[in-house]
View (cartoon, rainbow, N blue to C red):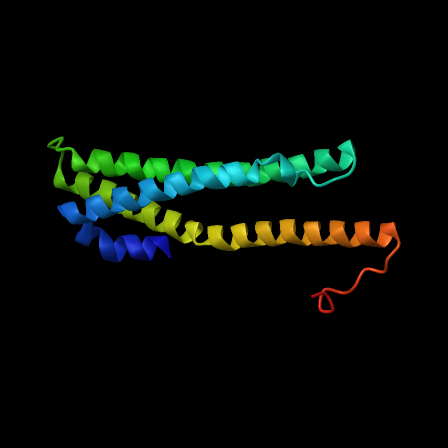
Length: 155
């Protein structure tokens, strides 16, 4: 998909300062947003186990998620770096300039496609946290002696 985008749109990027401005603005904002995602993922409340052994398993899952987000963040930085390099006039041959622009558009489209996963990921993460709160309250109420009502009966 990214190869097709790069093939058809890299010519639109060539010598287009508006495209450069938009690309750098979008990826700067995405990089900042991803830093917030790091903070959400690494929150100690994500350690949901009642024992240290289950917390170790949760920690490994958090590490995997952080590695995935780090790769995406690195891709954002590569896109921003290439945008900077393309904007400078090094006087190199036109073919080389076009190839770098092709790689830039390819990587930018790949990063955008991967970025569309973030809202779904954040939603699932928050829903999981809310489910844990509800389950905790339900078990607390059951333990105190009452029968916990079903979610559709509360109110």
